[in-house]
Image 1 (cartoon, helix red, strand yellow):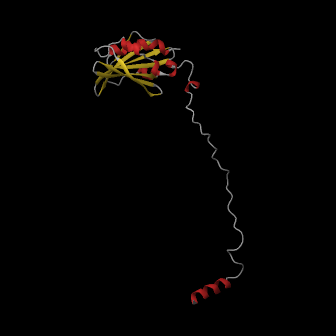
Image 2 (image 1 turned 180 degrees about the vertical axis):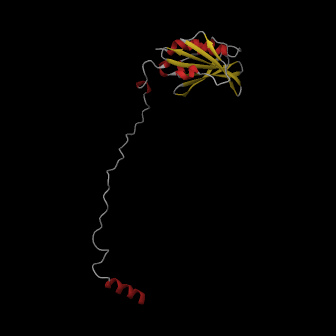
Image 3 (image 1 turned 135 degrees about the vertical axis):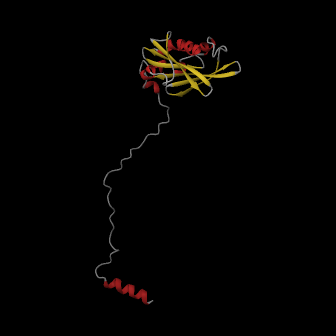
Length: 184
């Protein structure tokens, strides 16, 4: 009890007013709130609004080749392919999965740059100058985990695209079929 009385005596002797009485002022923010409300837009974006009028394949690379195109081309020397699936791998590429007999193959159509056209292979890959599709075409064999694949890069009026298939013959034939659809 002595401690409590001593504490009361000391607080009374400290003089002046009670420091805990009065009104407290909160500091004002130095800047207004900078977060703007974001509308909840649930509609998918309309990418056709932002596409240039001369976009390769109208902006949809999955329209580069059709089922009929694959029926008329021998894939890897085994025969015509039947499309089992088509999927956009990215905004600038499309994958076609094919069934040829009991084997499954992949064909990819992709947008390319002028640099890709000029340097389509790595240092040890031989680049072929090709006749046929577009204003110019170049091809290169790439090594893969399963063997090899052949890529044909085609220059057209509105850009560059490539067709990658299991072999040179089918890649070139498919590039020839895709080329008219590349330009508007």
